Length: 611
Image (cartoon, rainbow, N blue to C red; front, side, top):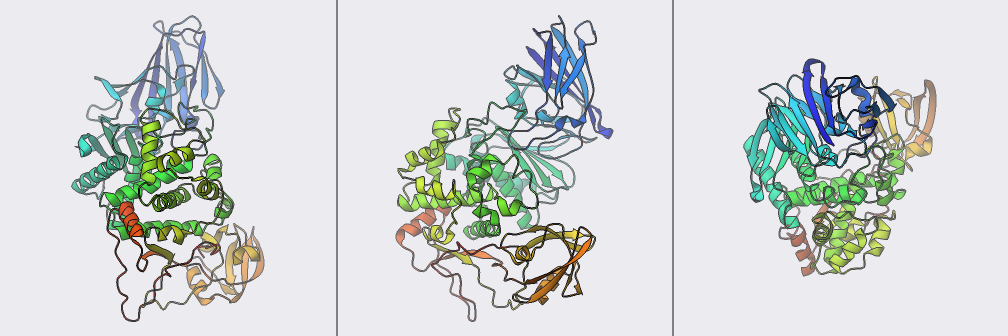
């Protein structure tokens, strides 16, 4: 069947686009149009059809009206009778500039095809074309193959490939760089960015080159980085030959913000290998109508996160100390999550549809992020492999084996194949590691793994000039509710949990002294650990008093520091891992506090709530 989509920027001021689907080669008396309920790379069911209106169908070429029946929220059945050709037209409202969005304004039209181009059921494997009728001064940017210029027309070999190629029409700033000899476009859409284009070109090029060097080769002929400047938090969605990133327009200065931009870019680019080509077998071809379950999301996302940071380090965009500071922050967040004792990485991966993407008040106590723990377990697995093979193999070896045996040849990974691949690539029995940290919920001894690279891990010492009093803590996360501190989460095992604090409670007084959101931190400092407190709260509008004793807060910071006199293997592991010589700790200045101990473990430290 010949399938041609037309996208018109008909009413950009009101965010309504008019679309058409021309079908030629109909063989049955009816056909179904189906809009996806999720987008690959974003594992949650959505209602993209909510903006669809004014659908009509006519046979071609006589223009006879064809009946349309809506079967469910995202399926329409068109009765074509004996017609062999038909045109379906409909309007879609789009005003959401996110990574998986459809956004139409007077400045541009950004199309993630899954949100506005339904497929013809039974014809997912058929080639499709999409043409754009937009203002003549707009440029259309996509990695789809161009087959026409007036109007701009593009072709995909099948619907999956169409969904995997975002399309941006407007007036973007577009430049092309050629790292590793491969053309990569950088497209900035949106006004007011504080980016230095030359610096972005240089640094994105370093990310590309370090990524290709890590894997050993690239499958790309070309690639596009889409950066949409906005005023919302950042995020990205991976595609086989592009990535679509939403970035705050002022995210390029100061240095800390720019570093976050580079981390996002590196993560999404690494997905061209891990997820888009090295992938669980169930993730493609896709069933767009329901959840698709896999135990391997921790590898697809968490290991991608791990390697994307390594890429920044090896590309010279992060110093070793900056890299290790970032890992320490992730560990701190992980240790502050009681759910780490209850949910394994495999379970977190499998139920992401109803868990990670549908967080609620109890999430921290029963769940973990497969991004964060996946990255940390990948780091530990890398150091474990390096240590046991005397640095002859690493997680790089596993990734390259996956690329050669699966990604490069288009073979999907079965659910139970990851560990055997890792064992073949390294010559190690990794079953105990996987049982403890992937399938199980054992506490991770980060100091033990750090020791393999000549490092110690533990709470960072207080600075010599830091004489601030230690605040008490409740074990809660809270938000502003009309000037009051409203409890969002109560962490298991904390003083607040033991006293019976509940999500939704509004804290109004400590020992009959008024509490406000603005002054909450000061109140914690005035009630140090061990202080008895009568906590007054409004619970569903009714005043209650909860007696408790303030607890001791967890470490504010963790740090990696060089161990005293590590052996030659540890030094070589450090150098192979971070691409820099191991260096001893600088001598402490007079009066400075000692650093973390060179032995011991951070496991078993208990919950680490925020307040």
